[in-house]
Length: 549
Image 1 (cartoon, rainbow, N blue to C red):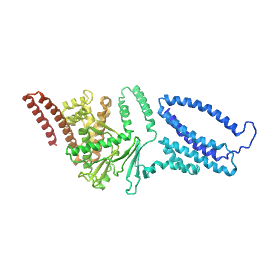
Image 2 (cartoon, rainbow, N blue to C red):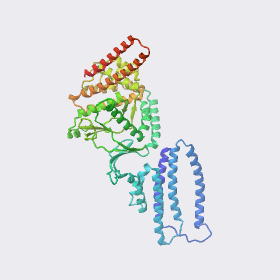
Image 3 (cartoon, rainbow, N blue to C red):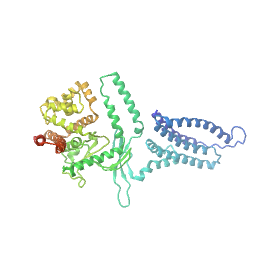
Image 4 (tube, rainbow, N blue to C red):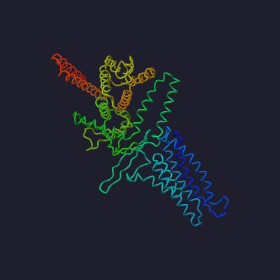
């Protein structure tokens, strides 16, 4: 129903364009009859408007009921606004049609008719927005068909709000087109004292906001049908992930808040924890609305563009190590994780002097902040403990923390292979630092197919936060293998282990601190001594793992 309503809006506006164009091109009839019969202008008007009033009253009653009670009320109200504007444009033509003009006046009145109708349609397009912005742009370009009054009036629609904000806006060559939005280059309005800033403007695709819920319902029905046909399908969790993620990704104001939060987290690492600055750059947000985002324009290349790095003397191994550092901090220290780090959402550029304070010769620009996940404290510390157990090849620890993260009983080995992309014997031998050979990749891939039903069962039981961590780890692993060479194969592993161990150490210190507070109220000397020993053991466990690398 929503699709029909949306189509109706477009059809109505197109009809008024063609109706005004074609009918106004006819010679406006000269009414000369003075008979009191059935062909006078007044009787014609009465006959026409009596019928239209009856139809209009009926439609108004039905429309009011749907307006108030329809489950798609918002979409219906959107349609009513479009019909209202179209009817206004049509009214101006009708008021022009039933006049008696001399020949010299016909052309002048036709021009006035076109202008009035075009202005009304312009008003409707501006009010409706969305896809109608594009419609007005296309109509204004039809100079070979439409009268001048239409093309010039709707050309104002194309640039009215744009010209108020930008010196220029590149509509024809988007910087990038994705499933939900596309990004255009533009330049903000210059002032008398300052040149405008070149920006990137992210625009949500028209109609997504209106129809995504209906599409999600369709996907739900299809998945239910597949599950009914194939009971062992086991991938229904994909729908839940989409249902939770899409509302966030469709809200660009939410994306702007995420971008500010991630920069605040890394700034806190430098100011409070004394960490060295990373090469991370997040484009500055100029302003954000729910479906439009204006941000700083930054040029760069994808991280898998090895020719670009060679040209600018950038070491791909260092890029991989820095990306690992950034995402390890997100996963193990901040608990606020960018969940879509594919190569299209990362840019590499030569370092811009004065804008960053690190010592690398490149910057890592992180884009598309629509999908983040805030991990609960227990989730991110358990995830860190799981990784330290994987690093040590500690099966007991792997089983314990995999269970805490929601993995099915007795499936910890397969879960460990999914998480690391390594065979179990490699994990058990505490040999994750070794290079993943093509043979091992082939074996793991083959076993993934062999254990497909078990994998589906594991994924179905995992919390969504863990699924997103699994996806993020997989994307980072493939990106790392694209960038690094054999000589630097151990570097990214060492970095991740460092932050895993650090997260466990910080969590242990917090726990011991709480125990110390309780002992101060009622504790014996033996309890203090035991606590001191626990502290020393935790300190040694952290530093021995760090030093061993």
